[in-house]
Image (cartoon, rainbow, N blue to C red; front, side, top):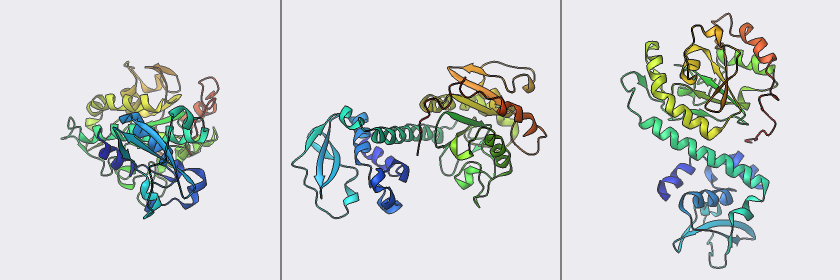
Length: 309
């Protein structure tokens, strides 16, 4: 990855949640780099080395990088047309900057978004299933939650879901889809919301025919585990037979034989559940006891939850 590529990618990933808390009320899409200088300097250092430097701009601490005697400052535009004097700087270590817990938290969020965005690029450029799928118009295959302990794993993008709306479980009118309504009722049993959990699809693109599900699932498996290795969830709830077949590394006779059981797959705890589609009579009733009996302490969920807001 080149510097200009990282800058372009970061411009799509800045958010109010990754902004410095004292600047958060002033953050907007017209000033995306506001309150991001420290964590961006850390990320540039991750990928390109060099020094992380600190100066004062109008009595405000500002971080930038020096790489091979060149000043690299991705967040200077937050000061609009103010002239920045880079001469009187102090070199700061990563350890010094990361002593601040909020800075560390925001850095981890933005770093994860960058890594997942790079995987999304690989997915978008993949051509293995090209005659069987339609690509996401927004090239986004990860829905971020407020914490990453639980990942909900769907089978494939729905025709009227987030591949068009850009928001998982919602349609283009920002109305919760019927499956989302059922899932939210189930999550209520463990005091969570849909927005609390990460959401991935086992199949990353939209299959034009359900007969392609198994083949696409096999082809997408490597991307799925790339994403999971970055997110590092404590438990994965796989929705329905197709998603479960993709993630489990063994064959089973009947889906009902694995529903509600916990499987260790490549270090991840996977619990298959019935798909929450209201078309299925088991969408809520078949999952109710599973959710009620989820022992979140036993499977390690929330013991050290990482809040992403």
